[in-house]
Image (cartoon, rainbow, N blue to C red; front, side, top):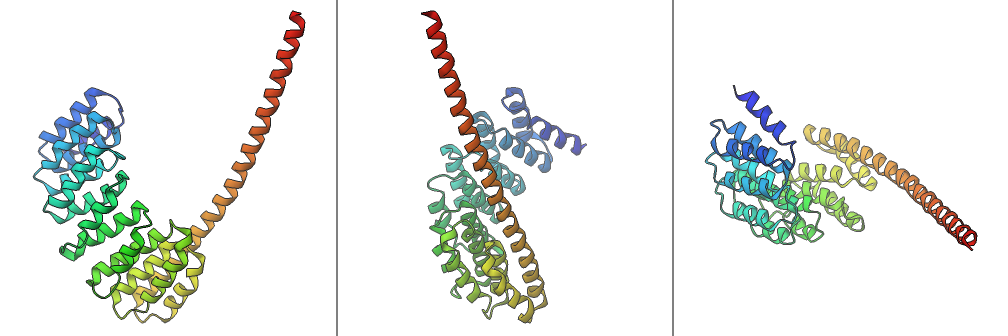
Length: 293
């Protein structure tokens, strides 16, 4: 039965540092007949995260089933700033040949936080693919990377010089990336506000989703306008959902500020307590010295 083998892979993935667990998962990745088990083995190796697990994963990048390779690439993304994992993913992104595994490699490259990840993703993001999955995946990878240099790259790809699915992906990703750069939010808001008036439906949809991802209270007025004036019912619905998302993010942000204030207070109290303990220790030490005399 397939399911027990999948469960076994998941359980082995919890045994961090166990050499036998890694050997078992490597064997499953190489030899199991069902692609789902092989992919689950890859996921488990990624969760273990050791050098031995990484080396075991590399063999899976040659699996004939693209669904397994997708799992392998996403798992390799768990190895932060790892040169070997980065090179394997960069090669996969350039050369795999199948759209969805290359899309997975792009997203994984962002997860590695490698210093060359941004340039590598941008170099391959304008290749044509089914439903522009490569370009859209690269746009989201840039957003996930949180690199401010991605803002002009995404803004550029929202122009009508690009295909509508690219524009859709870039607009949505632009809002997400903008949420990580507070000083650039007004700029991103202005750009997305322009795009929600674009003649192209998919571009307007991407911009609407992007405004929600931006998590900026100032965007609510624009989203409210879309929810009331947009002729396409699907877009009006998405605008209302984006408003709800934005309000939730704003509430979470306010809660984080409150929690941070409490944390700062605790830090101050802890610092004061440490000072008192240090003073008491000094007094005890001084008394001990006097008694010795």
